Image 1 (cartoon, rainbow, N blue to C red):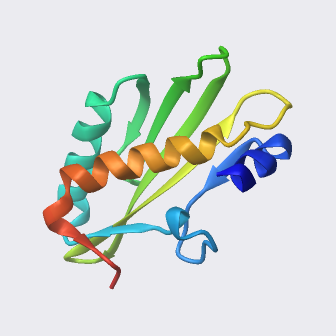
Image 2 (image 1 turned 120 degrees about the vertical axis):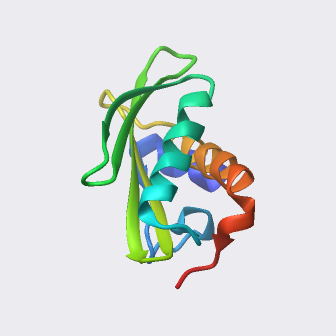
Image 3 (image 1 turned 30 degrees about the vertical axis):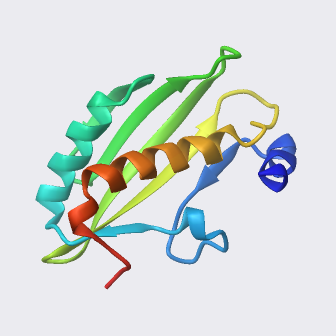
Length: 130
């Protein structure tokens, strides 16, 4: 975690993806159609404390959220639900802090928090990929 805080001194965003070096930032896959994954992800995010959904664009699979930190900064988070094949969907997250200073690792922690919550809710559908 110290490494994340040090990186966060300079960087004010974090994102996940297939090729992420950090295993905690790898895309998460669920054995559900994109439509079903979308419904599950949106309903789960709506119940998460401290997060506010600003936009839901189902046609492109994007949910835009906002979270305020204890220090009063605002974080903009985009959760993408992507169809990998008819029975598997991937979820990726991009989180960025507003302002010019680093985030001290808070975007990283937000991504881990969202993934942990989704994995708990969708545990029976979690898969390691295609």
